[in-house]
Length: 182
Image 1 (cartoon, rainbow, N blue to C red):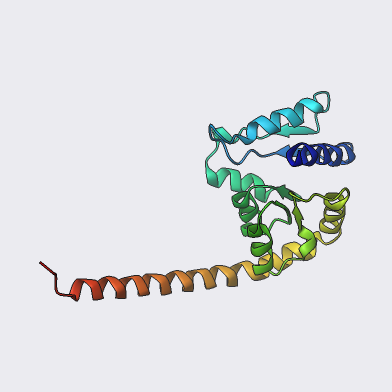
Image 2: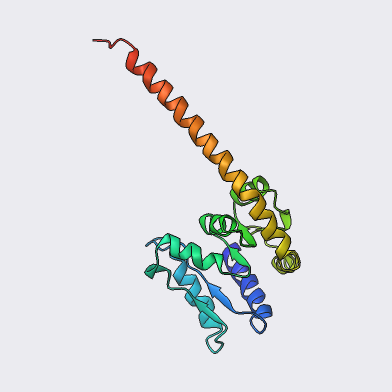
């Protein structure tokens, strides 16, 4: 029931935008059990006479190419964590349709406004539209904020990686120096 309601609200949202904006659906997960192309095809089918909506043929691209396409978006709205991370990493204003604490946590780590995360499990009627309006009216600020924070965030992640490697190496050295039991 939640999935159907979410799809209906997304379709309603697209209906509001389609006359003013070009919409590119970017399938990010393409597995047998989860294939974003299927929902993308259903959405495009709803608007089959409108050339303002299309689907990226993601299966023909590698991850870097898909990330580049995301970076060229005026505003990215995504439900897949790695797609949202691609938007953030390329300083592209984004709205995360999050179904878990990951979306909120990542946005909080990046000090982004909570209005840029929409809970897709508890979708309020105008929440996506309100988030969209907020993102559009603060687009430059969001990009500038990401351009400022992403380098320091990546540096913190590199430092964390180095610490983890150091701890693991120390642990492996300790284990290697322990006498073997027979």
